[in-house]
Image 1: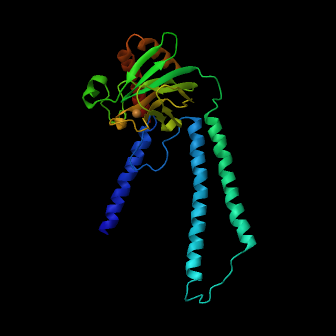
Image 2 (image 1 turned 90 degrees about the vertical axis):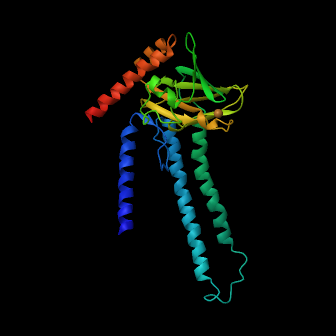
Length: 294
Ligand SMILES: [Cu+2]
């Protein structure tokens, strides 16, 4: 009984946690405790990746159950006491054809959508409207907006001591180890090209809910792209072991409306902290209104 109560309590708090994260996920995407699936997709590419993950999972389940059944059947049906004189069969053409053709068909059914997805990832559907260069350093990122009058700034992990000054005291929106001082700001529904490189060692630019992850290699430029469909604040991390502070170089992308982006970009060229503060006030203000309206 006590165990049952403890379990019920655990389930209730888990339920509350899920409700809590569901309510915050509307404007931020980040890892949550006990997560077993992907973060909610914010691009069509991530939706396709999620679909492919679920699709292959079906095969994994079927194959695992089939092999488990065959094993159990052999162990029980052909145990020494039930089957004292074992068969000496060494060939069976039909079964050999089945266990060769079966896996080939399964591999084809997985390979075809897999190659299609891979091709789609390297084939942007349209010309990029915005190009941003992300340069990995030990242990922070430099972002460069390739617009008229280039805008360049550094983005590093948010130190706890700087939270108050940056106006980022809400740890649900600006989580420890994921929040940064200056987010990469991009407009919603806009084809964005990201050029990725590094200055010292190999890093990796990854954003789970956008379905992108690409190595940042010194002396070479890699290219990826995304088209974020939902406004919000998204978190990723450097995903290539790059030294002692590898775990402390998060990536934060803030997706805003076209108008907000234009205002921010114009202001950021002269006063980045000021532009960020204005944008934050506007975005967080909207969320408060949205929350109140629920
Ligand atoms: Cu790194």
